[in-house]
Length: 144
Image (tube, rainbow, N blue to C red; front, side):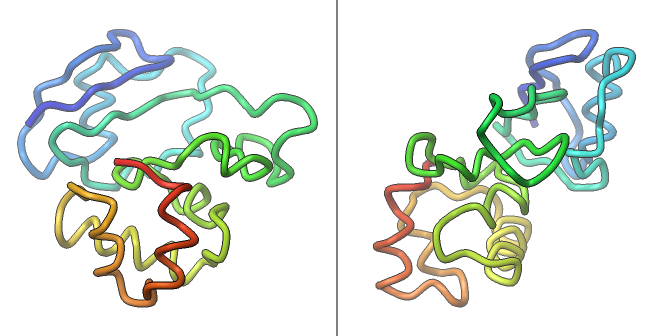
């Protein structure tokens, strides 16, 4: 499979990794993170999917932006301005969506792990807890 590793790594770009690889494996194949990069925002144990993009060392939101603490990669202050990618979103980014709490965010991640990447936004309706009303409120805030 092929994964795009971007950001603060020694060799950003496309990485060819065996199926079942984890973020830690892909980072190693990209030469590792640059010195001083905080990796706590990445789940290094998570399996990656073909075609996924992993951004390492994403800059913090601009001042006055997110209030979720240091190292946050989501920008919950403006969820409508930047749609969240369903295939690469972290738990925190999903929780920042309107009407999505920790339980539903985890269900979305579990669905993605069990079924592979989302190919359409409509697939979000297959996640337990996402009915027609919830889907209507979310579809403009997510992307593939």
